[in-house]
Length: 386
Image 1: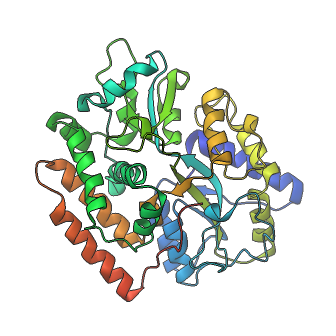
Image 2: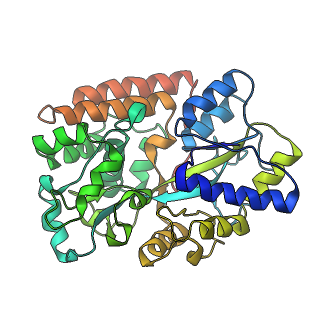
């Protein structure tokens, strides 16, 4: 089995696999790597894929399914009711399911030091110097910028427009898309933008805390809390409250998932897949991480809230993932790989000089969208919102 969980996350997951082995007698050779995309691509190309891999995006899941690399889960996991369609993405409506989200994260949130008064956050958000921003992530640098733009489009225009764009139907040159880019570019001053380009995303929010912090807010997913120096000091508000020109009444939330998929159909792989998607296994997984800095959250509605964290903040995240009826998958994660990578690079290019309008970058992205729609070599998902 191949997944991206290392460090404390990897230790908690290995304990879950040990429980599986004790129950079934099936040994799992687990490899955790931060270079999952590259390792998996190499193993698939060499004809030696893992039995199961956990893919960090629905778009990659769709790509491997399109290449006939995956085994359908329809006969392996006959009941997927606790997940719903959002967490079991399909290439076409009513088509086979090739992956299920065994772990989830909430986006569309803004973190702050809990010692701050919530009524001061709007004023802080209007001051671009108060945002902690980092774009760096090696080959994937720029994805925090795509998260900003996606969330702005979702909160400004709503789910229908967002989904049309994320599934390849809405042109990048549409004025509503351009408005989201401009809103992002107008938010930061030159110094904040320059700092963001040279700051690794994991380090950006560590500046939130202290007696005289240089910034006060971080727009980042639920996973980032585990990287804060004192996670207990962090609290969040939903992003529509603070993003420029957002619908303040919006209940739409952007989310991401880690999707388990079978590359080799064996009885042992089927048994492990059924275990990983079960509420029982995820409850054990969550409690294995109790008291640690990183808590897993789950899309499975049958997993109890008290297995997904140690405090009210964690449970608020888990409750939103479980109960909200306005969730949409991260758009760039759902897009074909070529589109996603071009989006990340364009976000970096725009942030490097926001005095220039983004229309040239958007025309370039639109050419890629049209080429992908015409060739269909890389598939688009049929839906990204639940």
